[in-house]
Image (cartoon, rainbow, N blue to C red; front, top):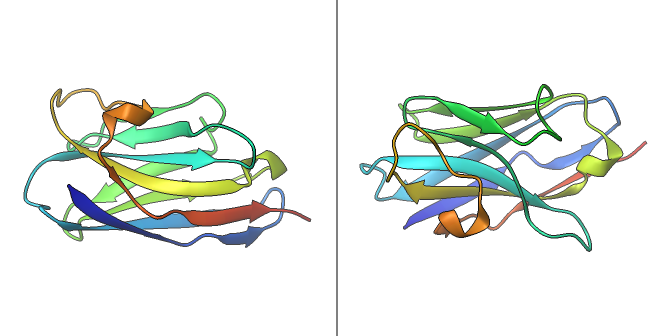
Length: 126
């Protein structure tokens, strides 16, 4: 398992932007898929996006075109650029990781990931 630490959350206005960062530590020499999930108050965890070691990405429809996931292999960091934020994007955001089993496609199901960060709060409000 990896240890994951998120940063970059905070308060943004509707239409604004935030960039979340995730710093993995531990067995970083192994190949991992990374992803971002979120949980809004009273709602279930939602998988937003994932990225393979080669940089292939997937997005859930609710964030497609607004959020961008990326990774910096040299820094072993993962990012989530969030643009055109909406009030309904308010949630705790989690960075997740799992060892690669299928290298071409990353998963977006909760139970696929065995490393989770502590989460960072994102609040979108005017």
